[in-house]
Image (cartoon, helix red, strand yellow):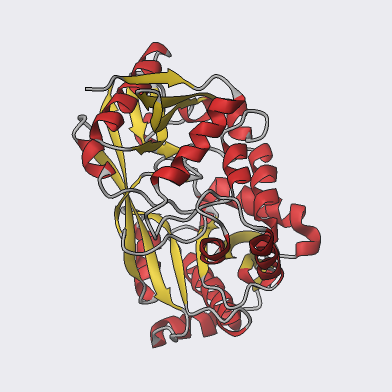
Length: 386
């Protein structure tokens, strides 16, 4: 049998090979979205992605007879180590992610290499996959392979689930995405809740202001870190990560699609919605992540006026002091409805996706079900003692 060799990424050329391998291994999957290669390079480069400022990261490549056949990242987030163990992360917990492999043998060897590195770094447990941060692409896809993911969501080879589970990994969490027809009116009860909120002078649902992008991004992040701080898997979002993510998302920001709820003048909740960049990327990006000149022009024109465009809701949150209150649900339904109206009328959207949502986040699952959305994809997160 040809020799399989696992080596650490140690050069710029290795890092480029690490990124490029994903395009080759997924080229035949019509539902895999080729993100811009420049963004993928940035994601895995120290000094560009601020995740590296609070994490130790080692990338690995697998070669069989000198030919690249797989990749994986192993990483330890210092901010995650400082979290309470009962919230999923905590002391001694490392991660691996970004796995791509030609076959089970390659996947098993890569996972073993990542585990060995984490063990050598003093970790006693692995929580995986994470690519790279919990805020980016957590989990491995286990349902919904028959359709393409929306922006900032991952799509994986269906075989990966079995390859991971065969290595002694037990599922600890399932993440859901919910699909909804934005053209449908919500049930009468939800409409009455929204109408009641509109009569309440203490409630203001305002649009994010692109002219004050940094101000509103700061407000959203402050609410986010407060709202999610008790959630399983929570790791604080740093100011540097806010700036990095904000810069990447700014071309997709439209005030009508990002709402901030104020109560008695205080920002207490938000909902962020993005036009589905993946839809246009699948049309204009080559399978290597490098659009042609014509493709780039089409992409830039679409970004200026993304219509028609379906939508994804990647983030929403309500300050902890209001959670589990009737007001929290009311604010959520109001923001959802206002964004739904804009998505349908201005952006000609027909469907939207909400997620990911933790399986045991009862409040968010209840809201998703109340507006008649249905689970369309699932991602699994596993752990294993080292």
